[in-house]
Image (cartoon, rainbow, N blue to C red):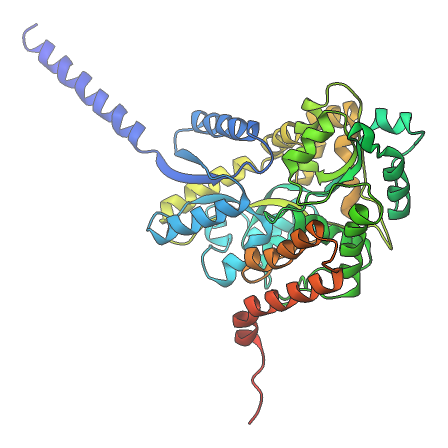
Amino acid sequence: MRCIMPKLHALTLALGLLSAGAASAKQNIDFMFPAPVDGKLTMEMTRVIKEFNDSQTDVEVRGIFTGNYDTTKVKAEAAAKSGQPPALVIMSANFTADLAIKDEILPMDDLFKYGNQKATPFLTQNFWPAMRQNAQVNGVTYAIPFHNSTPILYYNKDLFAKAGISAPPKNWDELLEDAKKLTDKAKGQWGIMLPSTNDDYGGWILSALTRANGGQYFNADYPGEVYYNTASTVGALQFWQNLIYRDNVMPAGVLNSKQISAAFFSGKLGMTMLSTGALGFMRENTKDFELGVAMMPQKVRNGVSIGGASLVSFKGITDEQKKAAYTFLQYLVSPKVNGAWSRFTGYFSPRMSSYDQPEMKEYLAKDPRAAIALQQLKYAYPWYSTYETVAVRQAMENQLGALVNDQKVTPQAAAAAAQEKADAIMKPYVDQTALSVPK
């Protein structure tokens, strides 16, 4: 027994060390994610990450919450510059072009080489067409869509009924007519509110109104052109300002989504235009009246801008991290997981086969409001995406802020100032890509 026990002890120790070695063999990766709509998304994503980590023994994902879309870009770039690039990031879909131009992110084929398919066929075969352009730059796939949205019209069905309105507005004239009926300043009740902040919401809604007015907000094929100073954009700005100062159906000043949702939940707001990604939040907090959801009203045509986020991978990660990132990416965009995320948040799933899942069919049958964004896809355009996207976007959003704060600021002056600022910001890219003039 004296000689057997030490051997057993040694064997037990060796097995323990092997077990510890196997446990430490997991490849660790950093995954950055925003929560642009409400805090519960952070908790749900934390649960998704834990479920993935517990489901397999090869990859350990460390989730890093990064705030909104803009701060996510800043933090991811800072981490990469410090030598700790994130292996995977849920990044605003319209940042893809800027990140690719600056050579900060990997072509998706660098990850997909660890699978059995190229990234571009995977994208085109599995994801809605409206999302594809924001995922590619010059024909190269740099991103895979994760969750997407369009702006939609939310309305208070009870206030509609009291005002004698039988259906949501289908065009701008009807919207104005309804907004007047819904406005009651004695009760502190407004007909409509639009978000006008410079954190992307204002520009996104304005781009959708410009589409509806028959125009293009930017050149979807060239990251150095925006169409701020055009008749269609000026007309959208005029419509926005008129709602405040001419028609008196919307309060003056910059409005953020929290102010708008608070007014809506309190029963003091008839209509608003917000992301379908807020649908879960709106459903949960609408207690005292029935929530209505409708397509965005048109002026010249139906037209909305795609929103949401895609998965990107930053340069500088190891081959082992690339393989791990690919594994986690495939998990996140799988029909089951992506569909469940859609049902929780209100974002629509960019993965088409998510809607073949029995759970998704049951969900849409139970709440048809979740299908409104899908119905708008036939009228959807890429999200504006340029060189230095944030600064170019804010060139217009800052002018929009001035426009809603001061009746003396004309849409024409605001558009001209925004265009001049945006052109100056994009000039390095334009100079780089312009043909040289012969001497």
